Length: 188
Picture 1 (tube, one colour):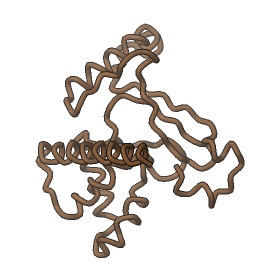
Picture 2 (picture 1 turned 90 degrees about the vertical axis):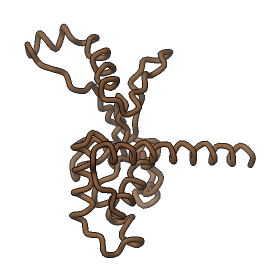
Picture 3 (picture 1 turned 180 degrees about the vertical axis):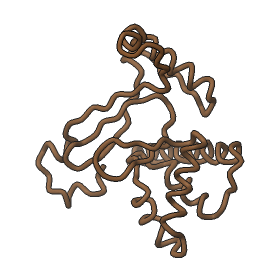
Picture 4 (picture 1 turned 135 degrees about the vertical axis):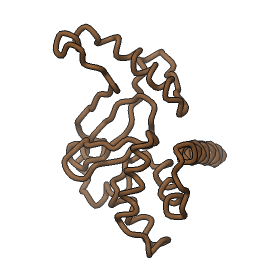
């Protein structure tokens, strides 16, 4: 019981820091912080599932019944344009939004479509954190890109690498175990 309370407190502090970081980015980008935008940022910043705009809209609708889907989509587009989240097309269907702007890879379940982050640092190496600093993020990308620079140059001379990620596809634990779709919902 004590361990779960400590884990819960640690998780809560981490979520709070994620929300604060994203809100600071919204302000720095000069985006107006409306009640709707604030709710969307709070929901997205702590969501590790890479939600779609529709998923966020459905979650927020009970507390904000007058908010439109267009508001959610336009806010996510503004956050993405400001570099505060990434719009991803990882699997068929709607695009997903990822608040994790650190260099990382993705695990995608071919059956249920769940998405999880995988740190990109090699085992035994501590990841460098950009903490919202664009120049630090670019340095990390360049560092990783150096590893494959010769291959990139051979395939596409002059290609400028913006980001480096891998998508690992397979089955999540529930799908690999043959769990019915209804049981899997909400577990990813």
